[in-house]
Length: 100
Ligand SMILES: [Zn+2]
Image (cartoon, rainbow, N blue to C red):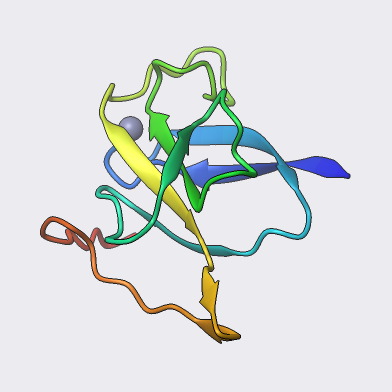
């Protein structure tokens, strides 16, 4: 069973909305992909990957019709398990922490 969930773009704060299966747990939303994770496009098979690659404002996922987005990609990563343990991750590029 899927239901809509929303995320903030870590670059510009725009809100994206996605239909998601309930069993998937979110780990983080970052401007860069995590090493070892695979990502599906937001309109692709998002349950088959370890996360979703959004293109802010360009992939039709923005929740508000009058929002435009920043046009840059960002990454939703699910919690990933190996041998029953949640995998820790480091971003592939420098991680930019944005204060809320
Ligand atoms: Zn954005």
